[in-house]
Amino acid sequence: MKRVAAIDCGTNSLRLLVADVTVPEDTSGPGAAGELKDLERRMEIVRLGQDVDRTGRLAPEALERTFAVCREYAAVIKGLGAEQVRFVATSASRDAENREDFVRGVRDILGVEPEVITGDQEAEFSFIGATKELTGRADLARPFLMVDIGGGSTEFVLGADSVRAARSVDVGCVRMTERHLVHGGEISDPPTPGQISAMKADIAAALDRAGETVPLDEAATLVGLAGSVTTIAAIARGLEGYDSGAIHHSVISLAEVREITERLLSSTHAERAAIPVIHPGRVDVIGAGALVLLSVMERTGAEQVIASEHDILDGIAWSLAG
Image: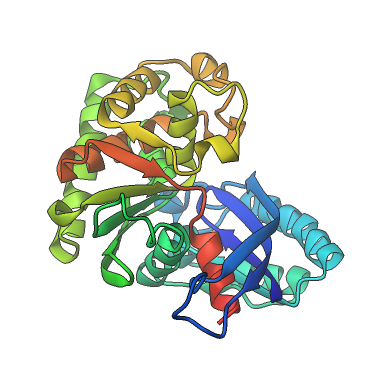
């Protein structure tokens, strides 16, 4: 058994997982997949990707928000005695001209070099984390199509026991919101029909690009990851508070996703903020995230999606265990 800490720094959120990971010596018998036991799982909205799509740089205030949470996580990691730490940074830091400022700050606080990974690497980590515990279920058809809707990008991975094809495209809830729903420095509240149409066209073009690498129509089981999907799952279940256990592996129908997306895109900021399971940091971007998920389901013909709370964080933790 090894105690490890995994950190995932995306465009919108900064997340931590400290876990005990056991990998069996006999990889052919019962429990061959091993076991990952959570000790601490946290998420904070830092919006590192604030204005990156427009400026090409990480904003000073976004960096400071991120570093403040890194300091909190460093204390948690030390307190739980993790043997190894891996910090993975994704879309926003890939795109930024001043990403060295980010790398230096993380290294000073956590003592590890943040790995600014490619979209394909991000997809593989996410696939391992999301599907490792699903591979033994006889009730689920193969192959899995994993869709990880982040703030700046969305990853598509097709596979069964291993990755067959993967593609990352620059469509995410923050990027779509900033690109299409901001007018005069303010987010449209609610979006206009024209803005929604433009966003749909952008997402459709991204799905075309993803489909060049990943045969989207071959998906037998759709698995959805990240905050947009889990928030939609929580709304669909009518939860009064965020309950990871109730959300993990819950099934959301296409009809539910369509109804929730239409409601979110026609509501005001105050109306969305009144929904108890929407994190305050997601209130302005959840409509775009929901539209990405709906577009994926319509393109693939999926009648339902399985929401997973296990994702890139779990994949990073498994990588530390070898």
